Image (cartoon, rainbow, N blue to C red; front, top):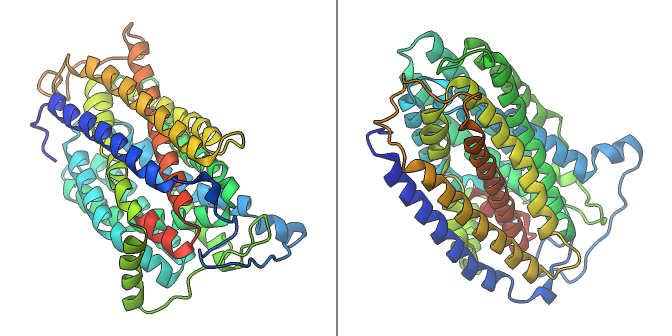
Length: 436
C-alpha cells in the first residue's frame, strides 16, 4: 500500500463513504422492517414451514455442553484467540513496526483476498459444514502473527508478511462465514441481539488481552516498535485458538432453547450450491441494499491504526490506545444489543433506533477525527520522529477519540449481524449472507 497520499484526503473519502452507507442503510431498513407484525418464528429454518417440531433438550452436563450459549461462548473464544490477536497486533499501528509500509501492503493483501473468497465462502460452508469451515479459517492467523516475528528478527522478510496477509484473507473469509452462520442459527428470534453482544464482547476481550500483553511488554519503552516477546506472546495465544473448533459440538446436533432443532444444509453438489448463491440474492434482493454498510465496516481501520495511532504516538501510547479501543468495543456491542433486543419496542422501531444511534455516532466521531487530521500529514510526522507519550498533556483528548472509534465500530458490526438475522432464519441463506 502506498504511503505517499496525504491522510487528510484519505480521511475525506472514508468519511464520505461512512455517511453514504448510513443513508443507504435507511432505505434498506424501510424494506426489511416494513411490517413489525410479521416477526419470524423463532425456530423456523424455512419460510415455507407451517409446523415446527419441538425436541427435548439434553439434560445434565450434556445439556450444558450442547446449550446454544455454551457453543456461542466457545465460538467467541475461537475469535478471541485468532481474530482477537490479529486485532491486537494491527491495532498497534503498522503491526508494531517503525515503518508501517509493509504492514499496510499486507493489510491490502488481506482484504483483497478476503473480498474475493468471502463471496463464495458461504457455498463452501454449506458443502463441508460449519465446524470444518471454522477450523480451516483459524489456520491463517498464526502464520500472520509469526510473519511479524520473522520481520522483527530479519528486516528483509517483508515479502513473507505480505504473503501471509494474502493467505490470511483466504482463511479469514471462511472463519467469519462459519461464525456468522453458527451464531445466527443457534439463537431464537428474540435472542439474536443478546447472542451477538455476548459473542462480540468475548471476541473483543481477545484484542483487549492481546493489547494488555503488548502494553505490559512496552510500558517502559519510548521506542516506536515492539519487542520480540510481544509477538511470541500473541503467537502462542493464536495457536491455542486453532484447537477450539475441534472441541465444539456438531451444529446438526444442536437444539435451540425453545426446543427447535438447528437444521444444517444437506451438502448438495457444488453446482447446486453456487446456484443457491444466485437464488439467495434473487429471492431476497434487499441484501444488496446493505452492501454499502458491509463495505464501510472495515475500510476505516487503516486510517485509525496507521495514520492516527502509528503516526502520532510512541509504542507505549500506541499500546494503551489499542487497549482502550478494544475495551470500548465490549461496551459498545452491549449498549447497541440492549437497544436492538428491547422487548418494549417493536422490531421496526428498534431497527430505526439503532440506525439513528449509528448516524449520530458517525457524524460526531468523524468530525472529531477531522479536527485532529487537519493538523498533520504523513510527511510532517516521519516514522523516526519524536511522538506523543501517555504523559503528554494533549494525550487524554486523543485517546478519547480512539475510545469513541471503538464504540462506533462495535455498534456498526453488531447492527450488521442483527439486520442479517432479521432477514432470515434459513441456515443456507445465513451462511451466504455472513460471507457477504
